[in-house]
Amino acid sequence: MSPQVRFARFNLVSGLGIGVELLTVAALAHGLGVDPVPATGVGVATAVLHNFIWHMRWTWRDRIGPGVSRWAALLRFAGGNGAVSLLGSMLLMPFLLGAGLSVTPANLAAIAACGLANYWIGGRVCFPQISAESVENRPVP
Image (cartoon, rainbow, N blue to C red; front, side):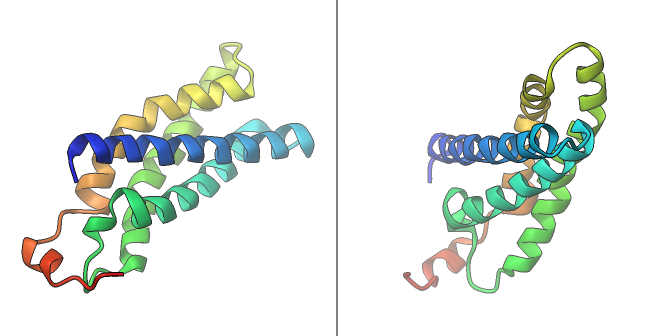
């Protein structure tokens, strides 16, 4: 898969994940009155799981070969992308809210700040390249 196609897929999945995160945060913060910072943590966790499933099945599908544990990939994804997103958002949200942004724009700014790091981590750590031999011997779905 070309780098351009992979990056486009990453951004599409991430865009859907942003929707999942923002809806979760809005439901918790505005609907249930949960403080926006912990609501953001729950929203990020929900989006990380959503994004992992789609990245594994679509963005980096060609890198999930025989013998690649999906559980190990999930742990790498949660430890890489999840940690960047969660820590980045949890550190940035109080600052952004204190600067006068409302919950949704603050979430969008935090997401944007973490995005490129997550793409790099996804391709290098969470879904590393597999050998050409593994790809050739991969069963066709």
